[in-house]
Image (cartoon, rainbow, N blue to C red):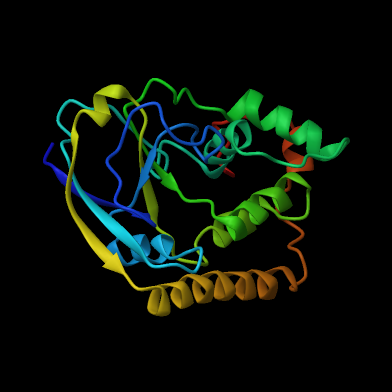
Length: 224
């Protein structure tokens, strides 16, 4: 497999170090990148400061890749990993049972992979996941909501082997005047589209988390 170019948005120049970072990110401890330069610049300025889209060359040869956006996986596989890693304020009752059920039945084996590809869950996307667990968003609506902000895929380095295959190539300046506005506007538009979607009458045929639990729906169900 050929080398790929990835970017990491940050307020500073970053040389990836295995074992460092936050453990409660989407896919746990790792180094989070994107193949989209513009998105990296937005994330570099997400706190209203100038930053850098750090550019890297990543050798993919012999690295194992879990692609959560492939046909092999469904939206609940992604959500199960998110539920295991991110900090959720889970209420007792349905949300608590939903979290248990999703992790028990939809969590893929992901910790042994070198690389994970999948959705990014920023604040607004995290809210969509929470709404689904709370029973107010259907599976179909969750799928649509994940496309609203056009965040694309993130590529996450998980293993020491993957970290040995990445090299810093360049650090491209990102101006807060331009990219903080783009970051805020992308999130605003996603939230507005989500609100418009949820204002519609819910589909009578929508599959909600309560249905998944009641019907004991498993990972191979065609409705997912």
